[in-house]
Length: 138
Image 1 (cartoon, rainbow, N blue to C red):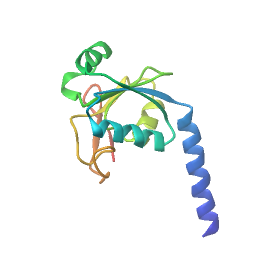
Image 2 (spheres, rainbow, N blue to C red):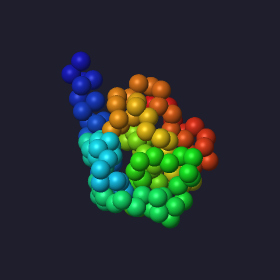
Image 3 (cartoon, helix red, strand yellow):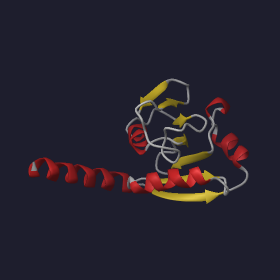
Image 4 (cartoon, rainbow, N blue to C red):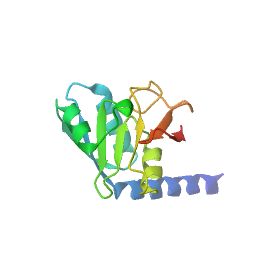
C-alpha cells in the first residue's frame, strides 16, 4: 500500500511540475465569481495564471477568434503555444490540449454546472475543439 501511495504522490508532483511550466492569461469579467473559481482550479493544478479583469469580453473573444457558438464567460490564452481555452475546461483537458499543438482551442460552452468553478465533475462534461467536435469527457 505504501508503494502505491508513494507512486501517486510522485505522479501528482510530476504533473504539478509539468503544469507549472505553462502560463495562461485569462480574461474575465470582474463581476463573475465562477471565473475566479476556474482560475483557482487551474492554479491548484499547478498552472501559472495571470487573471485580467475586463468588462469588454466581447471584443477580446472576437479578436482571438472564439467561435460564437462555443463562447463561455472567460477566455484563456496559453502563452507559449497561443492555444485557447474557452470557459470552464478542466485542467487535465488543458494538458491534453497542450499535447496536441494542431488543436487551436477547446471549450466547455456556456456555463455547465458540472465543470471546475461551477460544480464537481461528474463524468458527463463534454469539451469540444473549435470545430465543434468532442475533445474530452470528464
